[in-house]
Amino acid sequence: MKKTELVLRAVLLLADKASDEPTKGALLASKLGTTTSYIPEVMRPLVEAGWVKSAPGPLGGYVLVANPQSITLLMLIEAAEGLTRDDRCVLRGTPCPAEEVCAMHDAWSTAREALLAELSETPLSDMK
Image 1: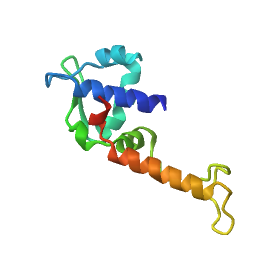
Image 2 (image 1 turned 45 degrees about the vertical axis):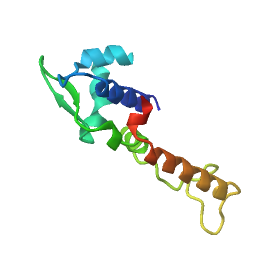
Image 3 (image 1 turned 30 degrees about the vertical axis):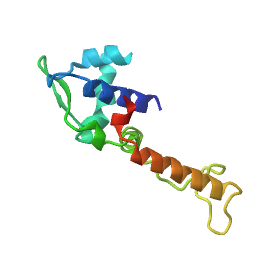
Image 4 (image 1 turned 60 degrees about the vertical axis):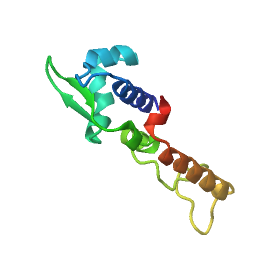
């Protein structure tokens, strides 16, 4: 989940800014410990979700336009990694057939739903 970590740290860095001036990609790269060329990849999920605006050029950069209180950890993870809700079995890697669920099916399903519920109730603003 390295990408998710970078996306989370990037949005938190933008949220901590005192001004509305765009943050340059080079500054984000430096603070995140990554390369300037990788920043567009890190920021893409945030821009596509409409949480961050980006502007190219020497006066451009990235600006957080969403309230971190309105973005949950689950929303961020799914923006960075894709949908997390699937029915893959923890043992088989494929869905458990209804007529032959695995030994861990019930416990895994319960734990997974609890984790997803917690992530969907935790706003990014709690990560500061």
